[in-house]
Image (cartoon, rainbow, N blue to C red; front, side, top):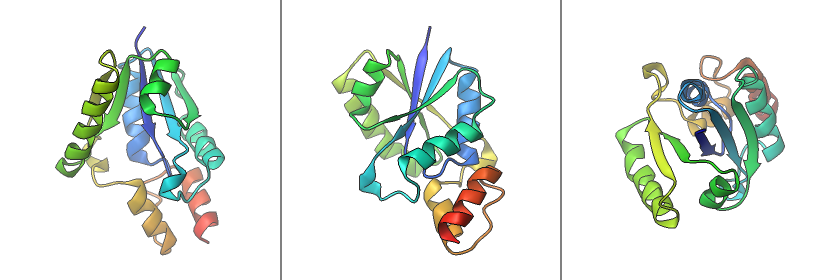
Length: 158
């Protein structure tokens, strides 16, 4: 059984994230969407809200589990007996940082593989940061996020 962990802050979860999850769920027996506490990033939504939004958006995915973590990613992957870390690459600008992370994770545990997926073409420019910025300025993000996420953003930024 191959278990993959897709880590991130998911602040908020976007259509790009859910696209990767849906596609990856066809590649792995079990996929864990690991929502990082990561208070250092000063998220717009607290951890419980991010978990709830992810559960809502991905509720139809039978082999996808959503959970939080606040420790070293490699330790979390080991605890969950996963084999793979899944990361998304939107653009060349993501590559250098992701390549460094993959190298460090491999150094910390060479038995864990990192695999990269690129989003569907219509999601390559979407990032949670851009979504937060647009929503905070009153812009329409409805085509980039699930309706429940849009509603949560509207409440958050009012």
